[in-house]
Figure (cartoon, rainbow, N blue to C red):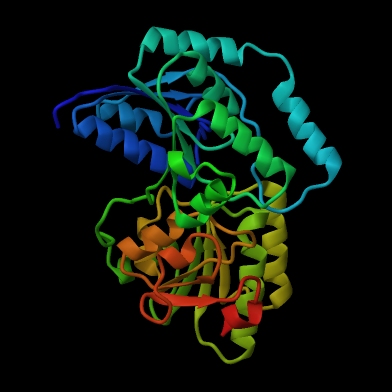
Length: 344
């Protein structure tokens, strides 16, 4: 490499305890850029669980409170919810000014904006007169909201990086193909360090039998309740497998998941575990990984982690998942929303 760059990476999230896939992907990208000799500074909107680890690896992490514009979902929402999101983001605060000042102090050669919701970050980056790379991890349906975001991208992004062809498709449809690069996410390679027996023992699982897991954020759009229903149907058909869920999520939704498990009458074979520090032990304990995401998943990290651990994946054929899973070879894909097929 002939040129070392100063790179400011703006994170739209700063989870204090359970980082999302978007945050983990950003952290891995920052670390690898630093390894290649670039001077990398990550700007997070609050105290960040991944910050200490990045600092140990030579990446500077600074905190600048800012708001994200959470109008990047796929499924329609009631208008009061949409209005509340607009108002929450538009309410005056010092975030844009603080971010512009931080970029002036950092004086980067290029600004990387992580995630479409970071509209404030993209505006501050453009105002800094530095080249702006906007990293997209979202799929939007056609309509006024997508056109709004396309105008923001056209005005503020010199280059657009999409994490999958599924994400890149809508960017192309909006006439921005000339700025677009598709660069899939990555994860650290390597199979689980723990063997299956010790992993299951540590998790309180029986040592024998087949375990199918759903691991990651347990949120409504991730389909945890639907996974429970598919597990119930599989058990009714005579499956001898056990089904395990693990991950953080809103307490109200976790109670709903627990209620769905109790309603099956098979809580002995369908289990929700507490969130784990990482996915390594869970993947070591599992024989296969399932996804039941209800909306098109741009490029789910859970699939990458399962692949890196040598675990087959069962999922809906939507979003970026078909770009990773070879149906019938490295996993099984079924029609989106078809719980009978998922159970099969």
